[in-house]
Image (cartoon, rainbow over all chains, first blue to last red; front, side):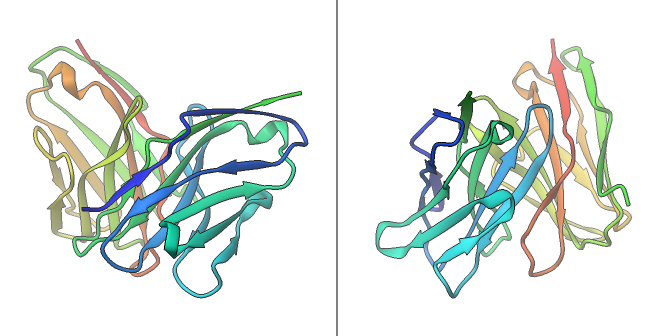
Length: 113
Length: 112
């Protein structure tokens, strides 16, 4: 069965520090992987996606993620966090044969000055 | 270009009442989705549609019905609301084969 695990419910980092959010997935085939960001009271916005090819993908707002098949992971990174990055981050995998996507439970990021 | 819009933004229902949530998109997307978001559970797919006139069940379809009579609209109905349906509901849409989903701002529903 397909599933996504985000082990960290909440992370706090200082502004300017580096960030890594973890995502592990379970998927029967080669997955399509996504990271979305949700600001308070808003819908989700796509940060980046991996379909195939280069395992290091670049996204918007200075984020990047690396696909590691051997570890079933797709971790999100940013070298230097800005206060405006405070939000909830969701990892997702899919689609399955029924065109369904599976989201992780999210990681809430707090940025302290 | 409004993207994905949802109506209403907030709603309070009493147990047993019915209501319809409307999702509209102006990007000519084929695929549309309804999710619910609950604390600690992420987003779970309720129903989805791969084109006008078609719908399919997602992960948590019980208690909900949907219709896609027009390509740009996707309606989510609750026939007899229950407190367990208190949630934030998100609609999303995407192009065929893109799988990048565009989300609406959400509808916060409380069932008392």
